[in-house]
Length: 102
Image 1 (cartoon, helix red, strand yellow):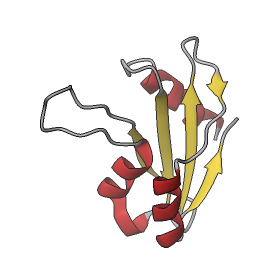
Image 2 (spheres, helix red, strand yellow; image 1 turned 90 degrees about the horizontal axis):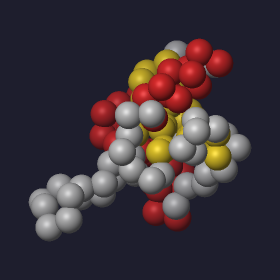
Image 3 (cartoon, helix red, strand yellow; image 1 turned 45 degrees about the horizontal axis):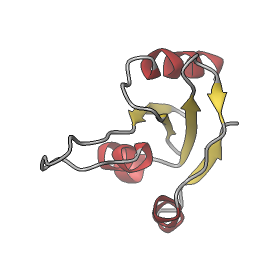
C-alpha cells in the first residue's frame, strides 16, 4: 500500500490543478486496477470537469470493488478529502467501498 501511495504522490506532482486528487482502484480480490486523477476542462471548451472517482468508473466500471481517495497538497502531504454528494451517491449505487485518506 505504501508503494501505491508514493506512486500516487509522484503522479499528483504533475497535476496542474489546485486540488490534486487521485482515486486508486482495487477489484474484489484486492488486486490493483489502476489510478485516475481529477480533471478540469478549459473554460469555453467542450470538455467537462470530472472528479477522479468518475474517471475511474469510466475506465474500469464494474471491476471496481474498493477505491482509495487521496488528496495531496502542494508539498506532497496527504490532505483531508471527502466525496461530493453526487459521487457518493454513484458509489453507493455501484456498491463501491470508498476508503478516505486523511
